[in-house]
Image (cartoon, rainbow, N blue to C red):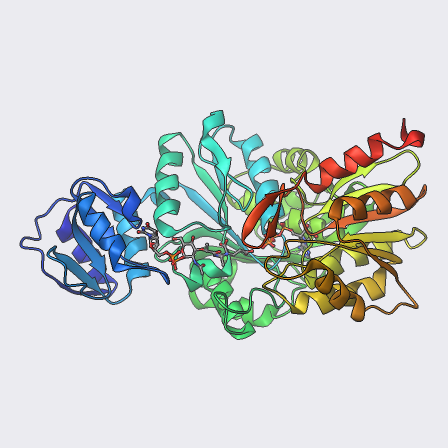
Length: 505
Ligand SMILES: CC(=O)N[C@H]1[C@@H](OP(=O)(O)OP(=O)(O)OC[C@H]2O[C@@H](n3ccc(=O)[nH]c3=O)[C@H](O)[C@@H]2O)O[C@H](CO)[C@@H](O)[C@@H]1O[C@H](C)C(=O)N[C@@H](C)C(=O)N[C@H](CCC(=O)O)C(=O)O
Ligand SMILES: Nc1ncnc2c1ncn2[C@@H]1O[C@H](COP(=O)(O)OP(=O)(O)OP(=O)(O)O)[C@@H](O)[C@H]1O
């Protein structure tokens, strides 16, 4: 990467301040933001809340011949000074990896809930339409090519900019033509996708979450960050039924012609309206009606079967239908993809012989718990609903009252237990949830050990009961005192309990 090209790009974005490089003809052999990843003749980027000048010293020892930063650290190495280092890192990564986004149709999902589910649904539709050409960056894992080694676990919902463009380059080199990715609000807060224009940006919903230390200072900032996806997308897709719809639509209109803004939902005025919806305990079906003259959308008026239950998953599926049409998929691809996708830890179900239906679901805030329990309560009003849940320690304290609110409305029994307590006492967290419970409506029992709570819930459930194991999905750990402590995972514990029940044999 030539220094003069980087400087020109930074100037274009009004980010460049000055440099002490002796010549702007310098050619960097590598780029890194972690001192441990620096190699010979590298450019090292100094950023981060916990940045230490020691990292710069060790980067220089490891081969950095220049650093890029917001301040001069007065080390005997040339510097490129910039106004905003996170934005500069994103641009430098795009230049270094040859702007891989230009060879991809990039679809980005934001929303408080449903990003992972919709990303999986879209990926599977597109994988049917364009085999071996679809990359995916989700909270659960990343796919950057068709070989087994091209799939790996994710660390963040949206990775650091350098890693995004690095993986995009690898995906393109492995033959990808489309990328489906999750865009967390933090991605805009921390400029992880700065300078990236999405071909399609989807806004699924918003409810208060991720507000606090190291996250957003308030809801307005959370909404503002999420809305940046609309401003940075060539086509926008928005849930017509969501809170703050008008603000999100207005953000989309800032940079996108209304012809390229699409809406969906049960709302009869949406571009795609969901109707004739039917649900079983384990899946659902619906029809779509098209309210647009755009000829490219007309055949989407069809019948769809989704292999995951929940009315919210019909919304996620419809978002995926619109996004995959814009990427070129046919209705047959959509019908196939939706009918054949399950998402790890999202509305996974186990049907027992005598202990009802068990759901393993990642619901871990009021919005998701409310969506899940209200769906079960409304669709299956005669069934007894039991929930097993805790609430995370060290963050999201208001979730505790939110869970109680959802339980009071839609559950009959709750086993309150441990869920990533961090540095807090899980029993105290459970008691806090319990303090907001209306005990005339919900019977609660606090059982600290999660495995025991699941065992009690399943063992005491009878034929038509619905048992929700909420919050952990397929996580095989509990975050306790800063350590990811091994935990078998909810589905494994549930299967184990069922296997041990005499009447299930
Ligand atoms: C508050 C926050 O979001 N921090 C993220 C941010 O950290 P940062 O840039 O401040 O960097 P830092 O961790 O302080 O480290 C300082 C710098 O020193 C470097 N370093 C460090 C050690 C060393 O030996 N040498 C060295 O050079 C590091 O590479 C880094 O560049 O950038 C890092 C990647 O460069 C992220 O790993 C880190 O995420 C932390 C772990 C995190 O937990 N983030 C959460 C809040 C988050 O981002 N969540 C969202 C949303 C999830 C959702 O929607 O549910 C997500 O996208 O996952
Ligand atoms: N469209 C939706 N509206 C409300 N709740 C939803 C929706 N889609 C999924 N959920 C609920 O939210 C849970 C998490 O879903 P998913 O993992 O797809 O969302 P996410 O946006 O990736 O979440 P997170 O940011 O917490 O990782 C699901 O297990 C389900 O209970």
